[in-house]
Length: 232
Image (cartoon, rainbow, N blue to C red; front, top):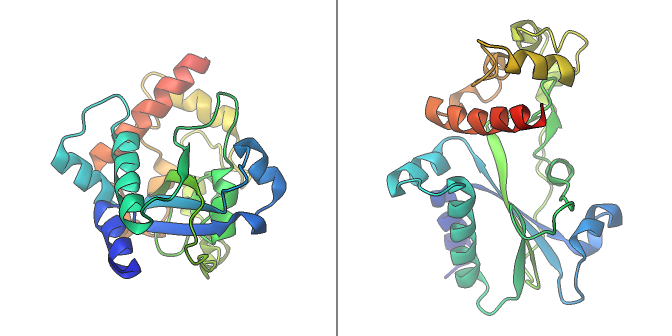
């Protein structure tokens, strides 16, 4: 199976952003939590952008406590078995690292050229806006060609109106950078327009054609709101 066909398999499954890093070219502090083994040469990061992954997941029937994670890991394992038969690999995101160790996904996104920080503190790029998310990271002994950095200018720098700032009910973006405590307080209020959606994110015009479906937005927002309530 050709490399193009294998990438097409990921695209069709909704993991339509892929980047292969050579471990030798990554900062050591970024690699430190991963306890890289001697045979491991590459870090493969897969992400979804737009609505396709959610559509594929709904067609299969979500199920489980972590349906997106379960689906993404299944797709990644199936793809890697076909793309690199016999490769030694291990997942390091969304599962696989010991408790307390974390992979710097946004730093990796910036190194790939995917991630520019929006005022509402999600990654944003010129094509997809903020409508993408990191789904899988794999350490492997593979020899895939390293992926070139995506040439993507920071879209916020050319956005004069900054509609996201005025759209935030908590005024958490008035200083141009998210004030996390104000955002958190607003989300935990009853009722709150921010509980299950982010008006600032919705107001961003970049990549608006790729905006998630309402049920996908609600799925993620319910989980983050539950976590906020646990943290108090």
